[in-house]
Length: 123
Image (tube, rainbow, N blue to C red; front, side, top):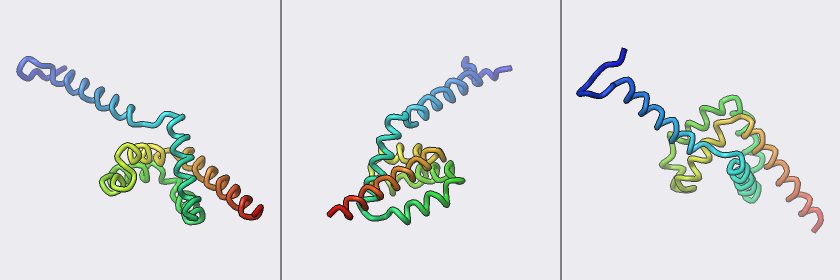
């Protein structure tokens, strides 16, 4: 039974609001192509700065808490947005919310690190 308030269906209005909210959240979530691009960019930056070991250690330790990490990024968005921008911070939150994407990031970091080491040895 719907509650009527000033001629509007309260439950239906709430349902529409919830549907619009879920639609907006789905827009924020990453497509696979964008996720792969962000993984590449993040892995390159980590390897470029020589932070492979701490990054992999952090990611491996916190992989079981992936959903919480993603939400923590969104909660602390004002800080992250100063460094990465709002759009990238949203993408980072979505990326870190999925354990399989965290594993893929670890793999890409290891691949870039091995490539960098091979280039150093070749010199």
